[in-house]
Image (cartoon, rainbow over all chains, first blue to last red):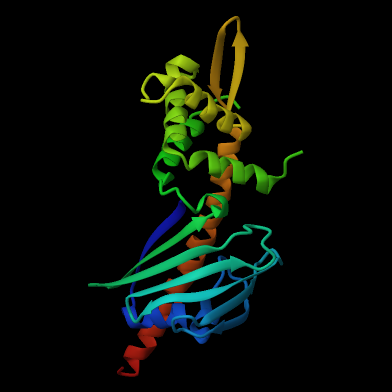
Length: 146
Length: 117
């Protein structure tokens, strides 16, 4: 199972962060990796509810993803299914889990984007290979011949 | 001509198996190895190792060259690089996106406190 985990400390209370990541008004304010605008934001934050978000990047390209709220527990945890529209980047469906933990300065957010690119390997295999990939990467970074 | 998505599929599918990852890790340490050297640490038979090598070869992760009766296996890093770059794109996406989320949530929380909530 290919997955990616990022941890962030945010100087805001968990319920504020939770609403920012789950409501349409919140998502419209920050979604996307650069300063480009959010063009569309829809969200029905309850189990089985759907979300859809479209943004434009500074390079002019537009991207849209959508999915379903699989789990939701304010203000601690939200799990979403995720799929890019058009599917050029990644044709499969993946999964996003956002965990929020209260810490003295505010919130520790842990985002895990999992089931990346494993449509064909989803059944039957459970090995997490991120760790070994890191090691191999270190090797290649060391200048192995191509 | 195999396209980019198919190559990624093959790479990720090849990497999902622990024995195949162990084979790659061995090759990483040794530069090159014979098939029997590769089979040595595993409690599996040579034909099973050959099958794993077929999958790795198909994904372009190893090359095999025959000299006399010995087959030499080498690591081929290009598909792995592509897979890493693909994953890194997601990492960039989330890294930038979470920066913006943090900035937004922090200003939102400051406003809420100022209003006494």
